[in-house]
Length: 245
Image 1: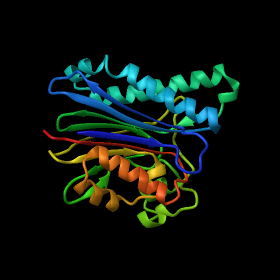
Image 2: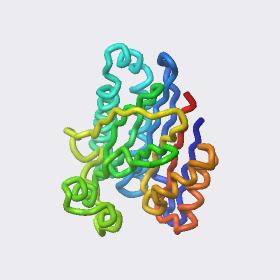
Image 3: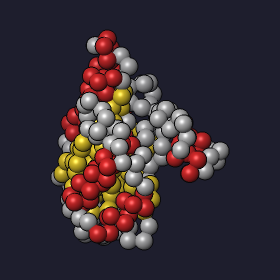
């Protein structure tokens, strides 16, 4: 089961988020999910996030069967993100007005019980079960790096004044480090991807409690409405998928 919502919020004049849900032709079925949060002014942010998503859509589906045979799905997803980064850098060189554009990207290839995660920036992926919910990506921003090094607590990181300053993004450098993870989920678990327009206003425990009573489509709508009710200071994008086995 799957649900998606994107909304400009109540403050921003445009929506610079982009997202993707693409079924994959692999044994047992699979899907590619991704969110991207653009930056660099109105045109730049919108172009960067959509270019990243378009690149993933074009790159992953025709190659994924070969990755499965080779046992390289995670590495292939990282390749796709590098390709998206290259496409953005090329567009920057072609159009001077887009020289400072960039985007986050959080992408997950789902194959049965396996999740392959590729991630850059501060958009987030969460895995929500009946008893616990956890973030399965790191935050590539100033407080996120300080949290990883043990210099901040999670509560201090959540309220840090530099939480909007990214330390990694597509469109910044050609040798982009991409976070990669492989993990398993259980039948009934919920995978949720979102941009920080949601996660800055809605706590993970609130997401977990709502996921216990709502199906993915209703959950995505409820979360977007909740973020907007608390100010909607940024664009808000939510993708939610529950594995039914």
